[in-house]
Length: 444
Image 1 (cartoon, helix red, strand yellow):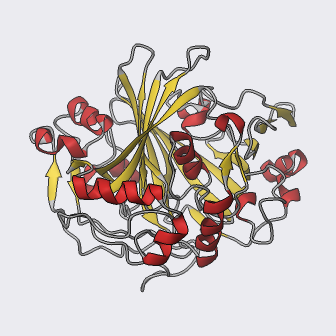
Image 2 (image 1 turned 45 degrees about the vertical axis):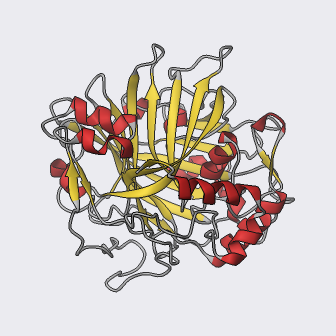
């Protein structure tokens, strides 16, 4: 395994050299630009369209997703005892987790299932974007793209970054879920919130010319515990961060007013995450990429969290263990990933000196992020436990886990509440529902 073998390298080089449309028509690439074929060893299958509709047993919006691969058994388990045997398939972060928690953390590896799928209109837009999309000057935004992956065959780290940030996540999503801050002894605190996101970039009636520099609008309100309830945030995220940076507002429950929040970006600490997550850790990475130099490392066959449908089985107190979530309810698979590296520019400040991201080639979702402190030591490890939301369809994180290897604490986002699927899709909302005044109404 490891870095590309010769045959894989030849296919990748050829794909990068010719127009996307040529290979898409000939079947070499998927509609999102991934290699359609499996690997030579047979441990990664060919992509055959993924899960495109709900499976039997799915009861509709709000119902938990039945596991389409419930009969699969682990092929093997990576532990601290055999980590050397699989080191070339593991990120530095996963190896760090095995070293930090040698007696409890393990990586159950299941058959690889390339379940990712998206609607046909998103595929069609991706084909168009391949001919028209470009980075803005300095790479701090994109132009000429709409409603699909902008760079299905990237040739720079920044293009891969923007593929993740603009990947298909639906048109409008609504979620009610809980976050957990888990301490060294396994005790945890829960924070519950309601969130709505309107993805302007994926509004079907629009175009690249009518986006008005808006990627998405998000509003979120904390509902529990009582000491944090009635606090919330509104974010207007842009496609070109130089033309207009992110706009954000916070609801001040004491004064019952919405206030501008100009610093809700970069390494600002997210207070409700107990200091375990920065603003730009959200969704693994987000916002302006301007403080880092971005390098495209290449592709690699790696073990990543994938098809995780069991995280919401059972009680949260059983899932949230000291150091990490219960490994028995996680699922890892071997997939090809794009690897990009971000190194802090010398004239900027950030709590991270370097970050390495591993993105699923099929969906462009970042599955693993390794973050290094100012001395260059591995500090934090972020894991996005992906699954196919087959009612959309889209491959998105079911749960995020942000680990601090130095303190032994971790933060989890996206836990189910009251046995209901945290995230559902709705018909797109009106943009007027994402104004500062609408945030006040949303919280009250």
